[in-house]
Image 1: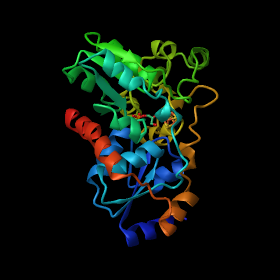
Image 2: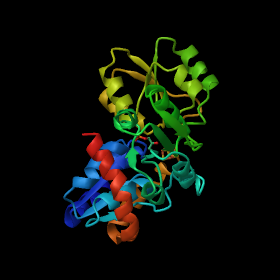
Image 3: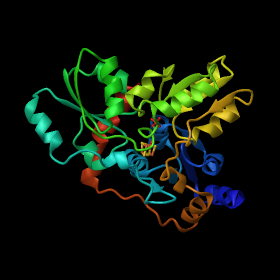
Length: 299
Ligand code: 13P
Ligand code: SF4
């Protein structure tokens, strides 16, 4: 199947982008593998005629928003991120009425409709830096409460109002699960994604996006590391560090939506070009503003 995918990719001038949480088989056939921020940058400048995005819907949508002339396909259009929808209708207007200088800061894990109502997007690898750089004192951070809290702790000079969304995968990791792995491997450092709950973050030695965790693990001189994020990162971690041991909490966190990016689905969408990400032009142009601002601010 890999060979057929390679053949179609070159025949159709297609590029495959995969998030670190996509299945190992998808990461293996991908031209670019990375975290949300890296993939957004790649999506904006790729020269392929077709982008096959092995991620979830907000990622395919962002690729289309940033690069509208490309055909953006997803191996399974139902792959969605529940957190991307977790903002109560009307709450953004309510907050804007309350604070005249409000900046709505939108985690990229959000629908295009939410991006349209926001001032700037962020990802977990640039959120602190971007919020710090904003001139506004009052910030409404949507949708993730945990990344929002993490940013608030690092930018105490601002009034950060936090929306109550969460990632069901990261938020399900408990302090007790983490303590249990740590007891088994007391020498291991704990590396955690900021979408985890505060009591889990408190036990951690390092907090960062998936790319930051991968980078930290590579540079670390520890031979044992506990990884508090989705199990897809294991593929890159093991490839980069064959001499190190990686442990996850039990049960291993697994995003079932990301796992819809199977080889069968990748091959099928390359053959049929049927799972096309569509976005109306009014929405696209409005959502492009905060996405471009993120790319500018993060430079
Ligand atoms: P990053 O890619 O920014 O680490 O985000 C993790 C995530 O949950 C993507 O869905
Ligand atoms: Fe959404 Fe969490 Fe899955 Fe990422 S891991 S796509 S935030 S549900």
